[in-house]
Image 1 (spheres, one colour):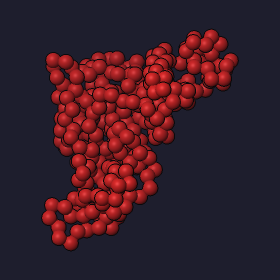
Image 2 (image 1 turned 180 degrees about the vertical axis):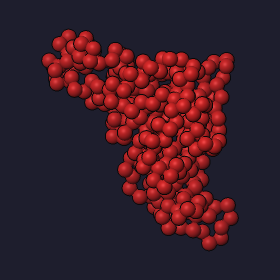
Image 3 (image 1 turned 60 degrees about the horizontal axis):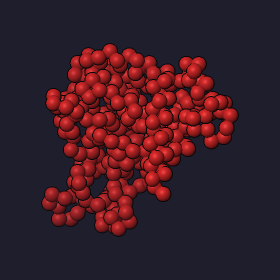
Image 4 (image 1 turned 135 degrees about the horizontal axis):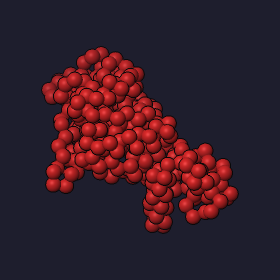
Length: 292
């Protein structure tokens, strides 16, 4: 039989096939081959004759069109990065790392800025990323403000919601479905950091051609797959000005006659985005040097 993995908790999987959901495990061969089935995988599976709690075993994983390590999801077509205006405060350095990673994976990104009732800083953030060309939606998920626009960008896509704990992923997903299908997050009043409440990776069906993935929040994000010298290619607002650099291999940090720096001076590039590019470049460079 053929199905779609819609949920994974530890080594147990829920596989959807012909509107039925089966509890399954994976064949031992996957572990031997160093392969792990992921939410979003299209798989072949066999039903077990003597079914108890486990009804099926996954025998084969179909080729993937995409794969994310964090969150661990396969075959998605869109990543929706969520930040909040406050509690927790917006982390644009993290967002820029995530956007660079999405560009590297060639998966379409979108941005949701939630909790617009707490601060008007979202206007400036929305302007920065909308000007670059990213779909950016301002929401107040608790009041269901902006959630209809979110529903529109979900159509005919498999979308992963990703962002730090507490930004409102679960609240937004609940608003989209109109019911409490995910655990609501709480904000620690002591340290204002999100408490992670989502315990599994799960795919929800919005309609027959649309799915979303709710995933555990994460505090750190590493760009280990991207080399420092290639980072410029994944900042889409910087990329057009590389050709104006005097030197091949320009880092756009120390060099004087730099096309990106000139564009920055002319107001064609956001100061925040450029500063984050520099921070990420230096982080990657430092890791590369320490590797040796």
